[in-house]
Amino acid sequence: MIFEGFSQGDSLLHKSDTRVKLVGAMALTLVISLCQSFFTGLAGLVVGLILLFLSRLDLNQVLIRMLVVNSFIGLLWLTLPLTYPGDMISFGSIVLSKQGIELVALITIKTNGIILFFITLLATSTVADLGHGLERLRLPTKLCLLLLFSYRYIFVVNQEYQRLVRAAKLRCFCPRTNLHTYRTYGHLFGMTLVKSWNRTERVGQAMLLRGFHGRFYTLNEQVMGKGDLIFLIIILIIVIGLVGLEFLFT
Amino acid sequence: MTQLPLIKLQDVSYTYSGATKPILDKINFTLHEKQHLGLIGSNGCGKTTFFHIIMGLLKPDSGMLFFKGNEMRNAQHFKKLRQEIGLLFQDADDQLFSPTVLEDVAFGLLNLGVGPVKARQIAIQTLGDLGLAELEKRITHQLSGGEKKLVSLATILAMQPKVLLLDEPTNNLDSTTRARLIKILTELDIAYVIISHDRDFLAETSQKVLTMTQGRVTE
Ligand SMILES: Nc1ncnc2c1ncn2[C@@H]1O[C@H](COP(=O)(O)OP(=O)(O)O)[C@@H](O)[C@H]1O
Ligand SMILES: [Mg+2]
Image (cartoon, rainbow over all chains, first blue to last red; front, side):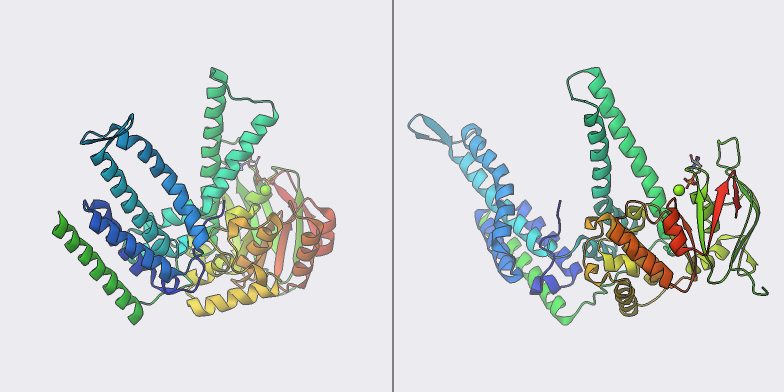
């Protein structure tokens, strides 16, 4: 598992203040996810593409991610046009719903726009920076620590679970639909939980020994520069523009 | 010797709740300035517990603990003690919790109130001293076992402690990393205590090896 593939770079977006990017991503996503009109959706997609251009990320990598998400949307293309009620258009023996097609098209445009916002605005920061950014946006410290630690230890917990599964397999455990299987999985999950709990205790101690007192400091102190402020204002103007577009066309 | 010992334990006992026998039974122990000690003992005999008592993670049932001649009684005392004694945990994954190596090495410094610029500088310096400079930007959970161990040592050394307590540092280390660790330790001019089952390792790094049996430490 390798995360944070997009977080390294020196583009405008990589260098901007995480708080600006968080606020921008939240505002843009909110507008696009709620909009009903094609034009707003398309405009959002264009904004996403401009951001992608600015972020100078590896386009192949981005395309792979987009494909993964769009494969889910592909399922919608298979089902919604056939099942959604509305005006029927028939192609030989296949009858499609006009509204159904419109709906899936809108969903596709909106989803891709939002993914682009996330990739360009959020994935260009490390999870650590996002955690710090959220904290400095006055989100409760506990929630931010939760984010940082979940990210750090999800791998360790996963490894611990895999180790237990391997141990079970080596003793010829083979999952079937029977009580023995359910009980074994119960034990595996239970044991993972207990081990994780013990680990949190030890990690807590390790932090205490190094002087932790409830607050994380960051090495990358970010100061909101003039450029960040301008960036924020531009994004907010775009958001307002999108809202205007939405009201114009519905 | 007229100099006060760095660490002194006097008749310290400890029993885990639910256990019938004390795991540490009136233990006496002293560590002097620049002394390099080894500690050996069977599995589960209480070595890790002993370290946790010194660090104030566990509170003894009876007995006294002195650091530089002052008795350690409350959280405030231990806070000072922890700035000067570094404990290397048995499992490096417990020790490395920051996303990147550099952030983890700087963590303790930032907590002590060192500014980010200075903390970064000391962290880079410490990694460089241990020959780990190229790991600086790496993600902690993607390091190999040996690298994790050496980086956790760096996280502690960065805080410039007076004493190091190392809990089974050679577990799962290949011979190259083990040799590297020996070199690092012998070049340190601070006091340390090493728990290990590896007698050869202790012979190379310690001036004296103590044994722990039945809740006591003996020579
Ligand atoms: N939190 C705990 N509660 C109860 N017993 C414990 C706890 N931690 C350790 N022990 C017991 O105390 C004994 C000593 O543990 P430890 O100090 O880790 O031994 P060592 O490090 O020498 O192998 C072990 O038998 C262990 O089962
Ligand atoms: Mg132990």
